[in-house]
Image (cartoon, rainbow, N blue to C red; front, side, top):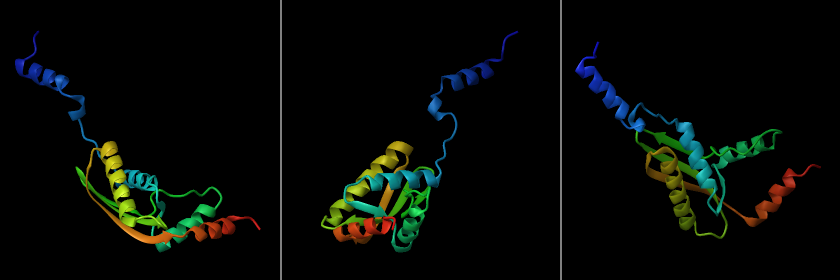
Length: 147
């Protein structure tokens, strides 16, 4: 018994189709948040991510045994089917050109998100909330010591 011609064509057409076009991939906002946070934190001149209250709460959480720094602090995203927009709150190291650091962050975040997700990043908005001063390093180290 032979199969009808129409069904053979549709089966062979789907078998010959590029596997990448079979099905749908969705990327959760949280995935993009993590990628953007990691990429921003890799840039020289970024001391930390997050604005005032988020940074304060994060610092407390980091000191709790078993706690660890969150790469998602200070990162907000809007993810569509093909595009993403990213907002970052950052603290820049003192003495560096903020515009240059922001440009480097924007470039690194866009490259990482687009490479890893295939989404087009339409904008990366950066809010510089603070400048980290060298003497603050000594204060942070002293606060972390056991007394």
